[in-house]
Amino acid sequence: MSIIINHLNYIYDEDTAMAHPALIDVNLKIPDGQFIGLIGHTGSGKSTLIQHMNGLIKPSSGNVFFDNEDINEQGYDKKKLRSNVGLVFQYPEHQLFETDCFKDVCFGPKNLGLPQKEVELRAFEALEQVGFDATYFYQSPFDLSGGQKRRVAIAGVLAMKPRVLILDEPTAGLDPKGREDILNLISDLHKKMNITIILVSHSMEDVADYVERIIVMNKGRVAFDAEPRDVFSHVKELEEIGLAAPQVTYCMQELREAGFDVDTGVTTLEEAKKEILKAFGKC
Amino acid sequence: MLRDITLGQYYRTESVIHRLDPRVKIVGTFSFIISLFLVKNFIGYAIAGLFLVICIKLSNVPPKFIFRGMKAIFFLLLITMVFNLFLTPGEAIFSFWKFQITKEGIKLAAMMGIRLVFLITGSSLMTLTTTPNNLTDGLENLLNPLKKIRVPVHEISMMMSIALRFIPILMEETDKIMKAQMARGADFESGSLIQRAKSLIPLLVPLFISAFRRANDLAMAMEARCYRGGEGRTKMKPLIYKKRDAIGYLVIVLFVALVIVFGRILFR
Ligand SMILES: Nc1ncnc2c1ncn2[C@@H]1O[C@H](COP(=O)(O)OP(=O)(O)OP(=O)(O)O)[C@@H](O)[C@H]1O
Ligand SMILES: [Mg+2]
Image (cartoon, rainbow over all chains, first blue to last red; front, side, top):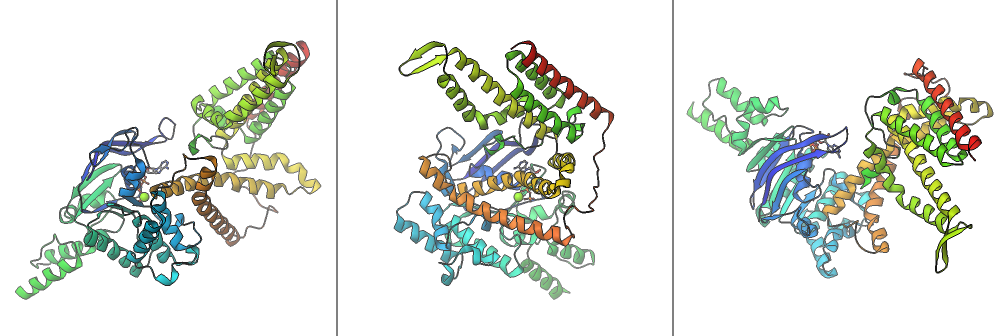
């Protein structure tokens, strides 16, 4: 039950003058239960890549396999795929349309053809999972704040009970508290339900704090694919492609240059704290 | 699916037709359309067809791209031709049950078909080779005399340019919302007509909301920059005729004369 991407190429507006490649020879294997960060400069092809994973875009060439089946084969059940691979788009609140939040969350499971009871149960569960206040369940989604809307939209995908959840910049445009809430929520989903998570993000901190594997995209190609520690040790290369390492990594490097014996490979605040305390304890 | 609609889209490339003044292209397209209705025989259509082919060739727009727009009007074309084919009275050459095909019917159907195809091709060629901004600039300029009789020319052309500007944006938005709803299992392609109409609600509601939001933002942004209508407004790139535009007008006049002489007067 994994996603395998094999020699994937994608060209937008193929056979017109505007044709330009968005993905070039992408090869990835996404096993079960991983928490993956997908980063890259704007326009590097992240959104295009994730849309291939649940069959919204057909590759120009190459294959995408889910559970060892080619999802672009004739007669493959796309609906089932989309219930297994949930995709939360950037600014998902723009897709809300129902008269109340609860109904909107019901949309996904209803499309799967489940009985009404099951649909409502799932919607209820999903809204609980995202920590949505029950007093707002039957309010119009358009009267909510941005962060609340986003929760409803994420619940709308969660209600389909996906085994792989892909989120395209889920924290874009939220305040620090809202960001942390959403990220903690995603992390919880990963831990408690063992869902595979792919988190697309621009923020190195977001990614470093939570994920166990980072895929870096650059101009349509996979530039790095490794553990955060390994990826962030390539600070120079990252900067060249318009990215950066988390701030703690820079901080540790400067400490090192100043003569402190610290590990420059740490990526999260928690690890950095330990390292620094250790170094000072030794001094 | 949505990308098949080429009417009103601009195709960016380098060509003589692209460089022509928009006024020449607007006048040319209108003359072309009017001449299509003046033509009475196939020789006239042959001339018009030749003119169109030359223009397409000169424009560097791939023909495939132009004819993609034809898919959208295929049904209209089919219905028009079928009605003309079966419902024109005259000398019957083939009949079955209650229907009969007449000689006049065949001729009329063929003419209507050609006329419709040329009309769409001609006007798509204009929009494909002219940016929406240029198009409305040209139109505003051509309609300027109407200001004397208090037609709000500037306002109309501003509305048009905003509408044209928003077509690609709304199309992109539609694409995005459609994908987002498909990711939630929505199905826009199968089912009965009623089911399909119903399945559009999750698409149309967010689309309208976003259109209103955009309209609101745009109005605010225009107001913030002191927009107050056309009075005393100057242009960054005023339209100026060049030599090639004079040649363009000449070609148009020649074309119309040719079509009228051959398509109407010489051969009846
Ligand atoms: N619908 C589209 N039509 C044509 N080109 C597109 C379309 N969507 C994206 N592109 C192009 O494909 C490339 C990759 O875009 P993509 O949206 O995948 O980037 P991204 O990594 O998600 O960027 P961002 O971080 O800004 O969201 C870009 O060069 C973009 O211009
Ligand atoms: Mg993106």
